[in-house]
Length: 197
Image (cartoon, rainbow, N blue to C red; front, side, top):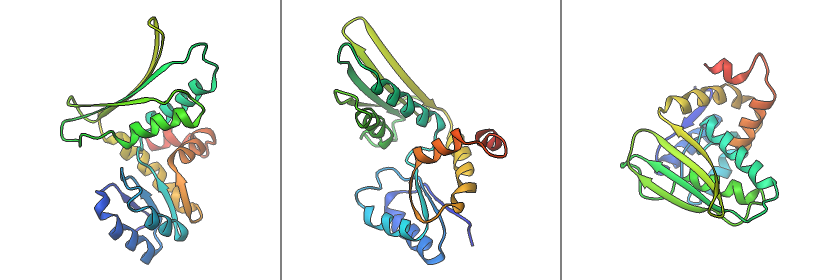
């Protein structure tokens, strides 16, 4: 029996994943974009029985990008910025804004940022993805926080770190940023990210 199940499939396969985790009491690392709201109830049902880590993006850089966005939102802006979030994936990705980009925009508003970010997308270019958030003040100043992933090995590395630790948690739904924060601010047995390399 598996110690943990890592789901990175299509949303349509989630009911089968949920049934397996419930039947065998297996913790779940859920990496499927656009799972909500279609399967919200089922996800909550699994989380009531086992620990479930909801991780739309497993990239450490993506987590840091959201942290930096929180920081920018926390300071007083002398002039209200224009805020843009850009999502770029290869052509085969669906022509809809990724959940990663949506969560980056939400990180801004949740931290008190105003006005809301404008979401944009571009399809084409190399593997795997790029996300950026840009604040523009007037016509003469801008700040961009840009993150690029060139290999899915980045996500796989993080998934292995998380998979080692998730079974220690009690049942419940855990946000990926909470997990990143705990591991990056409270090292044990050496730094957790270094252990994964």
